[in-house]
Length: 261
Image (cartoon, rainbow, N blue to C red):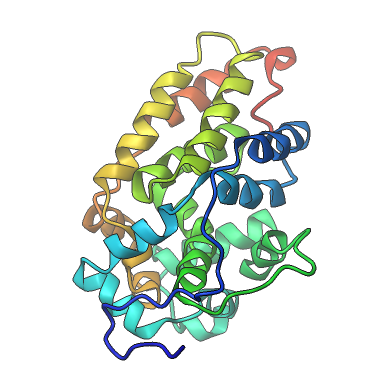
């Protein structure tokens, strides 16, 4: 089957099996993630087990916008681009691109590394070269850009909050389940003085209120001043998250466990 010329048509490989809702599989991977929060490969398995046809719904939502249709027409692979920092060109010190490069270097991250994590335990699986794969890859590859733009860090609370923000942007049962379970786990050990519910609610609200990051021209976005990009995209300051981090840093050292990066 060949791809249709019109950008409004979605090509889904006819051999691709229908997405299934598999909560037991998701819980198995969730337990592994809770045991080791650095085992981020589990995130991709949980999302696939729970999201059903959310990926297609979100792609069709993107195609309802001018920006989304432009990205769909380009079908650019983002991971190689985002790792080739020299290709960004001159960047102002306050630009999104400079903040992104600094974030990735500080955290020891790469777009290729995230791709590799998503491929763990997938040996022998059939791969589909269709539009759902392209869109899923774009969502994956913009994850760290979400960190930079939203203001949520890579500490445990920041990662859980970012998934709630992501759900506001791209609804799916997988990401919100991981976020909810992360907050639930933190509630078991952190004092009630940290208003985690407020962080979770705010993250979802901020994600819903903002323009869709995945629809943006990422190359152009890299050259925008970070403050201007946040204003244009209507990305609110994560005030509840910042307040929780401040309260956390005021705790006695023996009470600070869960939010260590």
